[in-house]
Image (cartoon, rainbow, N blue to C red; front, side):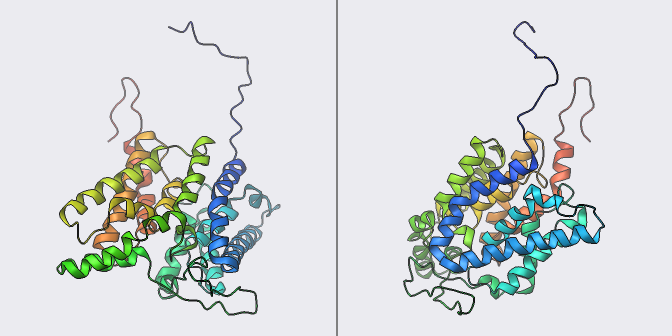
Length: 346
């Protein structure tokens, strides 16, 4: 039975998977979407990303110093604070004031990460904690969407001393929400739905109003494929998120075809692709078992659509991820492999 098994002499060296390498891979995976955001929103995107990353790094350094660490800069070398800053920036509107970015990034690091003990000890995704705090405190700022520069040629070039005023527009998910609310009036609901369907291809390329990281599905998919090829993430959570979204949306669509946008439109709108590949796959806040990852991803997908369609808020990725983060330890507990002769997990 073991004739084909060949084991080399010790020491047995793994594939060199370190926290820094994982975070660097995530940043490389986010690079296409970052470039797209810079093209679509110009210096607005650059300012939001830079301020978010800078604040995240400074706040983590300050927290380390306050704890009396002899080398407070050491944790910054793993790039986790940078990743948190970029993902938080990707979940923010381009026109959000920079002071709000500072508040969100500081809350994400200080409360979402460091208060639990730092990287590896946090229960919830820090970037989503920061975004949820901004949504709760500054709802209007978080729902003001700027039209990309490729659609609005008059968008001003933003510098430190120039106001960032530009034309705004509703997001596809906002139109989808209006279509559902008007389902008792098929003609009106159909008009709202048509607004969304015309954005499917633009949503894929990024030419639509939305958060910085929601504007280009193709760029997020390319980044996700890179992470899969590098084995930085496993396929279980992204596939479960997308499959559950498609199936659940399809079921609702069958009963309300005039008031619900298609599954493909849901998958390319909002932060679903960003959440599937870059947020839900956070190794700290997601299950470690294969079965648990399937359940976790399916939960994120179903909760996202439940909130989008039946809730008051048009987007549900943030809440879905945080809710599943909360039950992630329970999922792992009940999905532990049972050894031969062992007792079931109860």
